Amino acid sequence: MTITIVGVGLISGSFALAMKEKGFAKKVIGVSRTQASIDKALQLGIIDEALPLAEAVAASDLIYVAIPVDATLSVMSEIMDLITDKQIVTDAGSTKYRLCRMLEHHPKRKQYVAAHPMWGTENSGPEAAVKNAFAGRACVICEKENSLPSAVAFIEKVYTTFGMHIIYMDAYEHDRHVAYVSHISHITSFALANTVLEKEKEEEAIFELASGGFESTVRLAKSSPAMWAPIFLENKENILEVLKEHIKQLRKFSTALEQQNQEALVAIMQQANTIKKVLNPQFGKQKDT
Amino acid sequence: MTITIVGVGLISGSFALAMKEKGFAKKVIGVSRTQASIDKALQLGIIDEALPLAEAVAASDLIYVAIPVDATLSVMSEIMDLITDKQIVTDAGSTKYRLCRMLEHHPKRKQYVAAHPMWGTENSGPEAAVKNAFAGRACVICEKENSLPSAVAFIEKVYTTFGMHIIYMDAYEHDRHVAYVSHISHITSFALANTVLEKEKEEEAIFELASGGFESTVRLAKSSPAMWAPIFLENKENILEVLKEHIKQLRKFSTALEQQNQEALVAIMQQANTIKKVLNPQFGKQKDT
Image (cartoon, rainbow over all chains, first blue to last red; front, side):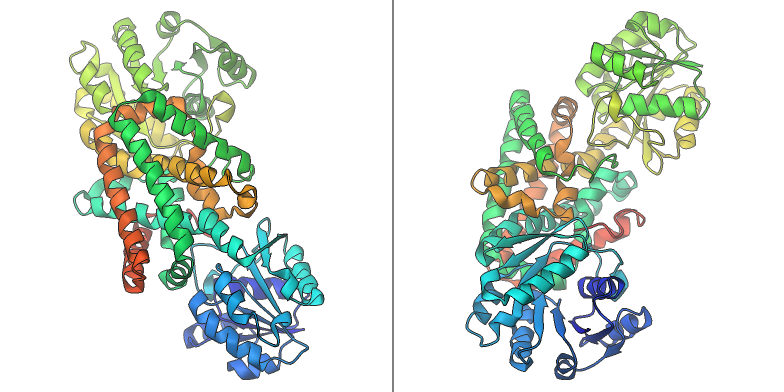
């Protein structure tokens, strides 16, 4: 099949590489407003050709949209108006509710599969695309019942071939959940980076000490503002709720420390230790702290 | 040489393995109040023998203390009273100020080297000890001028042979700095774990989604409360200062989001992005988010 990737970056690039590697795609067309990304993607062999959106859609069996979630809304609308009843459209966006509501009554809605492959790195652009991406992570499919069973089956086959496991979820619940297990992690990383950078203004030597623990908690602070600002804005209500709880937890810790309450500190940490049960046991083993 | 490790766990165990591997130590004696740790360490070949503290010290050229920082204060006092003028004592504690002040006027102070090898993992106990630990990280030596040059030179040789780079620092400055580049990362991880665990009470499915980004920011929440409570208490003033700044940063983010101020959100993230310059470039590459 021929596929079009709309947006030529980390996720779409990794998707394109995997689609060829796994024998799903013979040809990949790239659509991007950024000439440098197109040039890079051609050079890296991620795409075979670059075309304007309408021509790319007309030539493709599958259209894969992976651009910032605000831009996705308008581009997706355009794509859905362009497709025939033989084509499948999917996206990789980190928020799903608004997009699903927007497309709810579109006559071609059934050809769209609302998916969120929960993989990424803190890097961006086509040069950040990697082979063997996606494996070992969850792929959420939202509002499955609004898509053609054959379209859902195909997208599931693709992602399971990449090594993902499929989870079905209501779009609203999806957005609430990812606020907790993905979005907040990025926010705390950004905030932690800025906390330490504030200090650095006074003390130059501070980073000579940066240990593995610091690096792992602050790694996501390298993530792209262009990608994340729209996600945060679109998932505002859920994220504000998580942030409120997170600040409450930090205050609880701070109060226990201020009162030199060792018992309370230990209780907080013992509670946190129970996170072990939900973390992938092969992840994080023997990582430096 | 013969060395004694006081505390038989992650750090001392990894130290003992490296001391043998690099040819520094012929024999390792273990001192621990926990019989299970001694049994495990003997079984794993981390220690050759277990002895009570006084006998172990009498038989050793180097005494290496790696136990919680509150216990270190009293044990170190005992060890310093026991040593002859031929022995070297060092510790691996994450706080240095109180210990350095306590030993300041001890007649054997010069034989103690106040070191903080900034390596660890979230795991604990002798079974968590690993070969090739320490490499690529900083080792801080505090108040070098209060130790014998030959003792400092030896400890430096050991840690540089392990692949660490040496940084010299005043004990007070050390404690302030590690609050920013190590201790706060652990606190945010504990708090993040508890934030999500709070939510889990309502929503069972939440962890099916946990992505790599969540795992990397929450990994340190698995760390040992017995080790960390004394560190936090001992470094209370510095940590409260960092926590205050960190909560301020989270509130700033929250306010920008509440006001749907995309420009402010992007500015916060762009500022955070500059953390790239201080992170080890080989760390975190192509990690899942």
